[in-house]
Image (cartoon, rainbow, N blue to C red; front, side):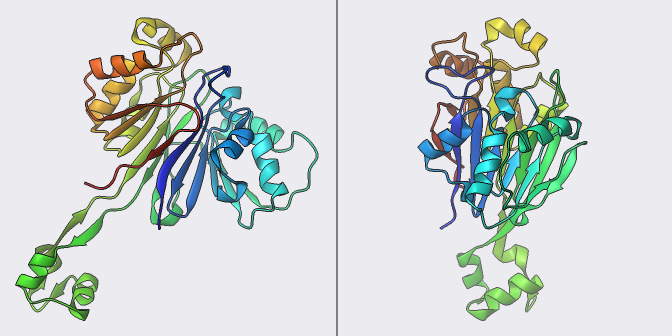
Length: 301
């Protein structure tokens, strides 16, 4: 049975706390496992969450600040130690190639797995995992940063009552799906569009065009909300979002499930992030993330 869920490995910004590890997020998408922003301690958090190196097919790094990338060294070495039986692809800003190289070869180890490097240097399509599209969009942060968006293509849902009304059954159902028409009956008459699911991952950034493009129409949006609204000026200065800003982005983009994360250590009451997000007008499903949480991708409407 296919599984689509987010496994939250860490939710702290800049420094870990007693209750929050550095960043780390695994998206399980059918047979694909995408690890986003492995910060320091990610390997141990994977163990606690029941995530194995064999589960990883792809690593996506938004930018090369330590809380989003220091765990790369350990994760890559673990992939090789466990002799993962498939290649693992890594995406990251091309401008940070020197940082990726240092982390990949931070210490001596035996390479047993092919790590395919596919750096990102512009907006657009970067991969097509499992028939979906994986896109990158540039964000606004003091160092070059990209967000990621996974989109499943639209499909068709056959409608049994309409099929029956036109006397289409058995092998003829497959024929009309393949040919688009059967005995004068079109596929549109007996089916409807099944909208593909959409996921986006938005980390360290100010408000910018890239944020809105990534969030548009998402079923599940994971987005940083480092600051509360009263500290908006700090957010702008340091290249981050507030809870209210993230919620307004989600509201305007028609997001179904909003996951807020990447919280500054200055705050001790996570429920305030939810309060401010609701006050900003977001009325969809809302999660204030905590370490080791699992968030399912919403079921299709």
